[in-house]
Image (tube, rainbow over all chains, first blue to last red):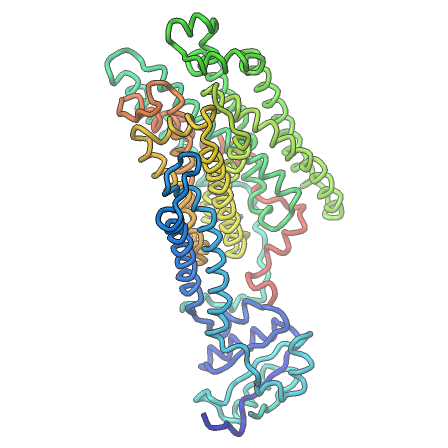
Length: 180
Length: 432
C-alpha cells in the first residue's frame, strides 16, 4: 500500500461523554459513516451511537470453545481407551463422567483465547502507528479526561471546510485537522 | 441494525404518582384461581383413574413436589431479598416489592406443609417403620435400610421432624415479618434517613442469610432427602439453596417484565437492569449444574455401596431418559439461550426462557422425589398416579400465584426511600 498523504480527518474534542454522544448520534443521522469515537474509558453508548455493527468475535469464540471441548474429550478417550488403558477400580475404560471436568476447562481456555486473539485479529491491533497521535490534544487527553469524535477524510461526504463547519456546530472544545 | 431513537436521551423520567399494582394483577389472580381449581379437579379425577380407590400415595408425593416448589418461591424469595439488602444495586429497586410479596406467602406454604406433616407415615419409610426387626423379618425393608433407620432414629423421628420444621417456619416467619415491616416504615421517612436504613437492613440480612442457609438445609434434608433413609450427601442443602435462587430469579423476571406493561414498572424497568437480571440468572444456571454434577462425579468416582444406589435408583430402569431430559431442560436449554445478549434484552423471549426454567425446576424435583419409592426406583413406568405430579403441583402453584398477587397488591410496587430511585429514572444512557 502506498504511503498515504494529506488529511486523515477532523478531530473534535469534547469535555463530557454526553456531548460526544449527542454529536456522534447527530453525525450518523446526517449520513456520516467513516467516523470514530475515542474515550478514556469504555462508553458503550458511544459505540452504539456510531452504528456499531456485529462482528465475528462471538462466532470465533464459540468455534474455539467447541474445539477445546472436542479436543480434550477425545484426547482423554484416546489415552484411556487405546493408548494406555488402565483398570482403575474396575471402572470402564470409557469413563465419560471423569472426562467432563478437563474437557470443560479446555472449553473455557480455548473460548477465552479465541475471544482474545480473534478480537486482536479483527480489530487490527497491535497498530504501531495511528495518525491521530499527531494531534497533541489527542495525545494528552484521549487516555485521561477528553472525549473525541473524528470524521475521517475517507467518508464520501468529507469536505474539509464543510466538515469543519459541521463539527463546530456541536460546540466542541476544539476542532483540529489531523494529517496522515 | 435498528436503533431506538435516542432523542429523549437527556431527559429524566418522572415516577408516576400512583405506585400501586396495576389493574391487570387482579386478572392474573382470577386466572390463577381458575387454573388452580381446574387442576384440582383434574388431580382428584386422576386419583380415582385406575379404579382401585383413591390413590393417596401419589397425591402425597406430588404434594411434596408442590410444597418444595412453592416453598422455594416463598423462602427463596426471602433469601434473595436479604441478599439484595446486603449487596445493594439498582436491581433491588425492581425486585424488592415482588420479593417481599413472595416472602409473605409463607402462611400458605405452612398450610401445604401441614398436609405432609399429617401424613408422615405414608411418605417416609423411617416414619412408617416403627418396629425395625419385625419389618426386616417380614421382608418389608432390607438390612441396609434397617440399619440406617435404627442408626438415624435420634434425627429421623416424627417429633424431630415436626419440631425442626416448626422452628424453621418460626425463623423464616420472623425474618419475613421484620423485613416487610421495616420496609414500609422506611418509606414513611425522609431521604435523609436512607443511609441509616441501608445499614439497618444490612445488619438484619447478613446474619439472616447464614441462618437461612442452615434452616433451609434442615428443611431440604428432612422433607426430601430423608425419603431415602439410607442415603446422604453433604451438598444436598446447597443444591436446594442454589435451586431456589434459580427458580426465584426466573419467577421474579417473569413478574417484573409482566408488570412493565403498566405503571409504575413501565417507567422504572430499563433494558440495562433487565439484562443484569438475565445475567444473574445465568450465573445460577451455571452454579446449579456445577453442584449437581459435582455430587454425581464424586459419588460415581467413589462407587461406594452406601452412596451409589441412590443414583442407580435414578438412572437405571428407564430413569436414564428422565435424567437426560433433566440435564437438557434444567441446564442445556437455559444455558445456551441465556448466553445470548439479544435474548436477555428481549422481554418476550426472556419471559419464555424463565417460564421454561420454572417448569424445569419442577421436572428436576420429580426426578429427585419419585425414585425414592420402592415401586418406582429403577422402574419408571406409567400409572395414572404418576400424572398427579403434573396436576397437584400445578394446582398448588396456581393457588400460590393467586395468593402472591394478593400480597403484591398490598403495597406500593416501588420503594421511594431509596438512593437508586433517581438513577433508575435517568434515561438508559446514564453516562451520556
